[in-house]
Image (cartoon, one colour):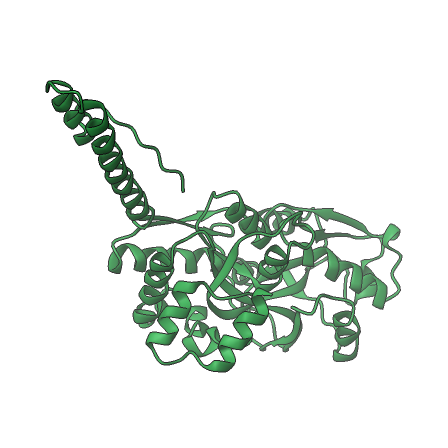
Length: 360
């Protein structure tokens, strides 16, 4: 935080100086200098306190595309902060998880919803991040899935059928999308040069490409019940590419440790009659490490003291709990979050040790 001391004739420092200069006597310079220094310090303190207070009255919550579950959750968090904490919080659709980590590093957002993979890479300064980003955890919850959908009518029934087809298999803001595509090709021995792999910047572009019949398949993000997948399912536009357990495990061995295997229950989407193997990532609510402990505490307290209200924003929100939050974090908690957990008697010596290890 930058502090600037600006004095004018209305400032107490300047008024005192004018009064002293008006007095006769040889000690005026020393007296004026001493008083000026004291009042300047007081002025500076006031500015610092004011700046700190203002930082806690408005927060920007970075999230993914409008209409996504992450966006809905960000709106829910912003609503709670505005309603219960007196913080003017706004949800800002920045893009994918990596984009939100870059936004935190550039001081464009203060909080964000991200997957664990991008948050971990940002904290460690692993590619695509050229340097470490000050990002800390305050909540974690519902996993975000990475599934492969195919366009009905594309002729794709199995992974080998991707040869000669077009797949959206890259997304700069979600590096894991490209890694999953590469793992799929490697496990199924598909020559990448025989598949047209294209990139999009957001989920909306991928959805429109499927609707417009311009692509045949997509590696797409989304928590269970994502509205855009519901819509595509209702319209009969998509089906899920089914990959058996053994092949999923082979693919997982080629992917970052932050990814896991999950099953999308049958009937999650219209037309989805069978359970589908998908990759999953824990979802994080993160705060810039530059935020004060008081701000981090207020954010964490507001969320969990009103968690029932938060759960009403979306069915997936019910998976955001204190129990889930404290389970196997991949990055350190914000000091304000730790303060809240200690206040609730949830913080243990083991967690303290784990926190220290994550910071090292």
